[in-house]
Image 1 (spheres, rainbow, N blue to C red):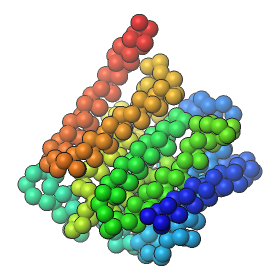
Image 2: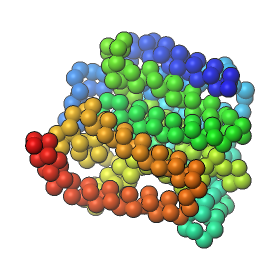
Image 3: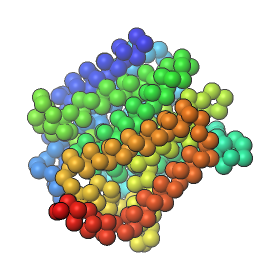
Image 4: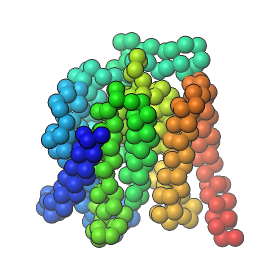
Length: 353
């Protein structure tokens, strides 16, 4: 408990300090988000939220926590990923290069730490599905998927941060209930949560933060990367904090949004990595909701999915039932998006009544 409190509070404090220190640096090195045809915010906004979160967490961790090789590998890979994201924020590097860099870092994380997915659990109801030598490959794919899911969803103020907090709070609950075996994972989840708070307050311009900052690709990718690390650590065969299928519910909404958008791009013959304005938050905005309304609704839905995941875990709902449930939700989500113009018209009509 003492480690968790000290590391968490220091991570939040250091993140706040770095948020202040990095603001003038961002202007000097061009680490700014400038409005264009896809970005409708006012003025140039510093892209330092993710940098402050990582710096605050890493410094607090190195000061308080005892050395642990797997977590050292995680922090090192995160450093490279944050640097890659900051470079992309400043210079807009090619998507293909960014993808291959994620593959390399995912490989280093899985192989270097020795921590990777080794089971899917009893997803199909016929017994546990062990991954064997295929585990590291699945883990690398999971790293790429979650990293890009949170990057893609970072489209309106507070959204990536709020969805991250939903997943982190769900993990805090599950790790706390799992007992002393998962103390290190619990400390990391708490420290990440508190390190996120200064950024989120500044991003939403909550007093006393008057000047807005954005998370940037550096932050969105780091959060997705960190969540996968925690999810993998919590679902190792032999000593589980929760079952693998529960992880799908914890990050359900960002995952579904990414897969649905990529599927639509593929059907249109477009590159799945090229950005567009077809994400869930864009759809809410076109339907007539403002940023804060869209943020509240999407975060609320993500919270409900995470709560379903936690409830299913605690009540011992069969894994196959939970897996079928998340698959059905994805199918319904994709069907809804394929008829989105009709749905948005109905929503607009309802708002006017």
